[in-house]
Image (tube, rainbow, N blue to C red; front, side, top):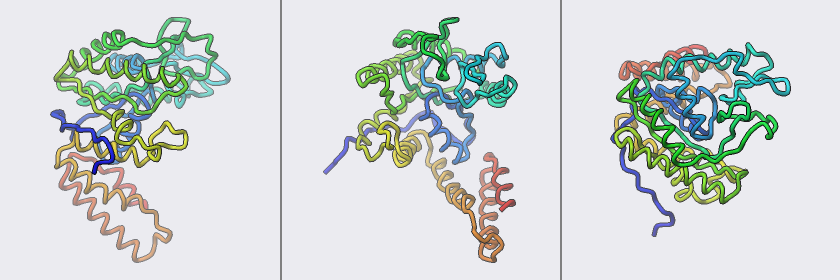
Amino acid sequence: MEFRTAIQIHSSDTPITHTSQIMLLGSCFSSHIGNLLLRHKFRVEENPFGILYNPFSISQAINRLLSGVSFSEYELIYYQGLYHSLMHHGQFSDTEKKGCLEKIRCRFEPAAEKIHRTTHFLVTFGTAYAYRWKENGEIVGNCHQIPADRFIPVRLSVEEIVEDWKEVIGAAINENPDARFLFTVSPIRHWKDGAHENQLSKSILHLAIDRLKQNFPEVVHYFPAYELMMDELRDYRFYTEDMMHPTPLAIEYIWERFSDTFFSEKTRSINTEWAQIRKGLDHRPIYPDTPSFLSFKSALSQKLEMFVARYPEISCDEERNLLQSK
């Protein structure tokens, strides 16, 4: 007897390997997947502008990275003792202009260098609702708690999103014809917009992605993270206390389905092998000078070196240094 509605997902013809160059952009769900990819030693650039929710802000970020034009102090907004970029998450804000620009530069420059070699863009749309800055009419990535009367709320249409992203995808594949876009819709509901409005928003995002798939059938792909959360994991035990965000268990399940979809058997085998080494590296001994821990450390070091020898394409310098410092 089956007690859930299982979602069938076919293996992708756009596999992700440990040599893929991956860039993740979008809502906090992209951060969850990005962190798991990093932990499994994939080559990842994750949300260089911080978390972004609406499709226009994400497309603006990609266009800016493709242009390579960094940010200047004239693009910053000063409010309540902090300098902000309207294109960036609040984690980039600072009490000093130089501090804010330095935080932006540290993420922007590496991402701008890598974007021309990116093979997989993993993009998560969060909401079709956005805000325009009244001074120039531009869609902002974050309002930074600036008074609402300085913004114009809008709901993006399917047509607007599609036309905008057709240009973005075209520009990206012009730089790298092998680039692929893997879209998801965030399963996290934007309840402040209202229950019905949230459904409308998510529907717009789904329709826009489907239209993009029709326009770029070999380039655009969709992973049903939203459907997995809404249907397979519909029980509230898979949600955190706010009843909106997925629990670690739910994220782990979606990661498993993601792995089955985009990783080959060899890649999954590498991930399993690395997980054992990672578990050892995460171990924090109470008494690091005991013979038992020194023996454990020696055995772990041998496992790490054997892993490096088998998979030279995967850099483990950071883990080597970590093990030496234990």
